[in-house]
Amino acid sequence: MKKIKIAFFDIDGTILRFGKPDMTEKVKEALNMLQKNGVLICLATGRPLVAIPKFEGVNFDLTIAFNGSVCMAEDKVITNLVIPYEEVMTIINNATRMGRAVAVATKNRIVTNGADEALREYFEVANLKATPSPEFDDAVKEEVYQMMMGCKRSEWDEVLEGTSKAKIAAWWDCAVDIIPDGSGKGNAIKKVVEYFGFSLDETIAFGDGGNDADMLQAAGIGVAMGNASDSVKAVADEVCGSVDEDGIYYYLKEKGLI
Image 1 (cartoon, rainbow, N blue to C red):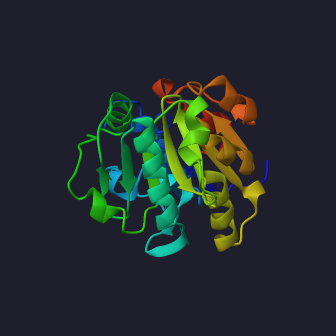
Image 2 (cartoon, helix red, strand yellow; image 1 turned 90 degrees about the horizontal axis):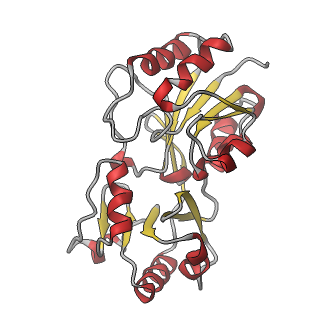
């Protein structure tokens, strides 16, 4: 194994157990030991910036948010990709025709124009509430890094109808994140590697959802959590224990990385 210089971690279902506000002590220990051993640690999440929690006792070196639309190393912006305004409006109109509510995420806020059951459940995973906001029309005029809505796989084409610069990233079968075409966690880690002058062989990534698949494929070593779907495990290099079993800690220990 080539020396690992940077490790990427999804949040929900990977370092954070679903419904829990903080990591276990073992996962915190693993992350801090990685840093002590000279490995940079990076959050790689589909969450918007304003929905990323601060984890007491762990300071990440980098953050990838909005499924790769924004990537930051402290205050340095490495990637900053937005969905063009015209396509934001097209997607909103598509969703309205489908009878679906939509959320838009800017750098500083997340607002919705409605709250159907799927969108409410989707927000609850991140301990957020999908509450319709009178600020929605103003928010869509800002830079939109990601949109979220409830829909099934069979409806994806309808969601994106009339667009060419947006794509879907999904980790759940009842809702999607809509992101800029050049975004995605896999593309983001390639930009990070280029920024630091590393090679992809010197990276490792952990994830559990469908939106983690391209990241696991791009990394030198892609590790699927034991709680990941079969399709995610199929594209990973290795599988560790589940998030409920502190899979990251025991994998890193077994591999001698901590």
